[in-house]
Image 1 (spheres, protein in one colour):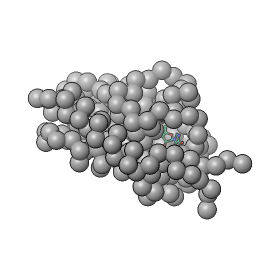
Image 2: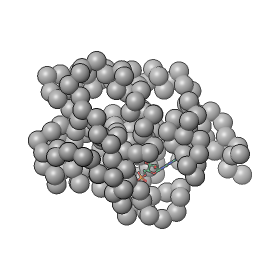
Image 3: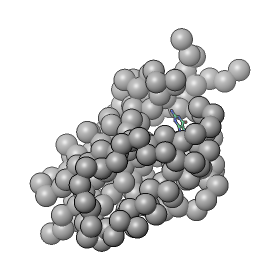
Image 4: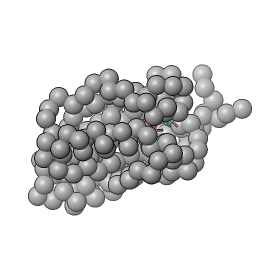
Amino acid sequence: MADFKVLISQEEIETRIKEIANQIDQDYQGKKVTLICILKGAFIFLTDLVRNINKNDIIIEFMAVSSYGNEKRSSGKIKIIKDVDRDLTDEHIIIVEDIVDTGLTIDFLIKYFNNKGVASVKTCSLLDKAVCRKIDVPVDYSGFTIEDRFVIGYGLDLAQEYRNLPYVAEIKED
Ligand code: 5GP
């Protein structure tokens, strides 16, 4: 068992997700938008987010990526494990991530989708470790900015476990 403590409570997450959902409703009024859930980490965030979006002309897609290298930090070499199933040409898309850390994954994804000819790309992440950036990337909808801590829960894992915690917790490093 890892030693961890709650960093962001369930209530705080719920409140912030409602705000982001309202913002998406406003920003995409009269426009269809495709939300792309980046698996596995964003699966809980995506499901709570979409249930708080009121507009019904949203489309949901899933994509799975992994980065080579050590377990706790992205190497920047991104591998697509599962691509989206449809042609997204001319669609407005929002990439939904669990956390932006170095920024390398989201940078790869923005370029990937721009090359596919989408109409627009925005990014949405529950967590943002802004101090850890290796590359400047836009996080258009950001839940919480956090310090350089390894976090788990609410979709985020430690060696594939702890994703089911209903809050975000910080691993206590010794
Ligand atoms: P980036 O490419 O921005 O460095 O990394 C993004 C990915 O690294 C996230 O989607 C996530 O899979 C992983 N990651 C970065 N920081 C953390 C963290 O604190 N906890 C967990 N569980 N994964 C993280």
